[in-house]
Image 1 (cartoon, one colour):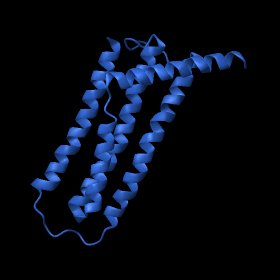
Image 2 (image 1 turned 60 degrees about the horizontal axis):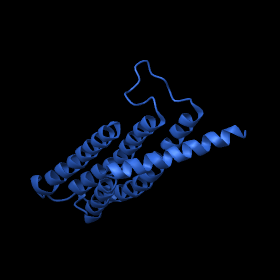
Image 3 (image 1 turned 45 degrees about the horizontal axis):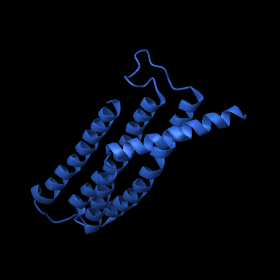
Image 4 (image 1 turned 90 degrees about the vertical axis):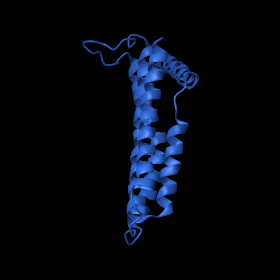
Length: 171
């Protein structure tokens, strides 16, 4: 039941981020008259660079955050709140929360690059910016959380928590 709530909330968040991008893309493509584009391609080149770096960062940063939180869970150093979230009393519940946080951070990186690319397209009308936005949106949608995907991630993290705890016994 707790897993279902985390999955559903994650799905809503990711869908909302994607819909914001799609709505803005619709405005950029259909709602803004095609005035003469700005001279140059600087903003489009920046959008390509930021898009590429955010694509890489969305694969690295959430993993680093998850690993740090997993180590805290394994060490028993998970931050205790005055009113703990429901389900945060078990490793499974804590890891479900970590999944949601890492998913939001990864999605935000993709969303930011996507909005930049769409703004660059709106100003300069370079197809490269539009292509970057499309790739980042596709990457965002590829991270859509399903129950099976979240459950598999949590199970893998539980195995790693167990390994880290066993390793600590030998220190």
